[in-house]
Length: 96
Ligand SMILES: [Zn+2]
Image (spheres, helix red, strand yellow):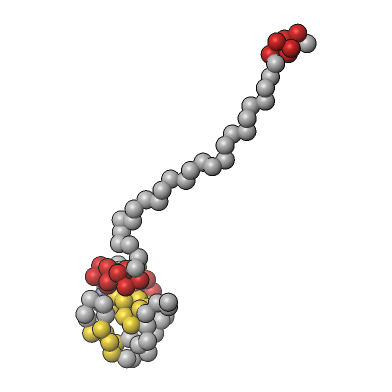
């Protein structure tokens, strides 16, 4: 399943808008703001804008990504057992 939304900077935050919007199409963000779609080339100052939390939450629900904070993964089990220690005949070693 492809993603249905893309991110677009708008008034100081990144919002998610429907992917099918072409440049200059008007559509709704996931947080219900009406926006005009822009080029995928973002202005430099928009690159550090925060993600809109409402869009982020709605997008995660849509994409079935768990919201943050994500549960930690189960710790890796150490499947590789230590090799058995060689049987050492200490008595013989001391005699040698
Ligand atoms: Zn938003």
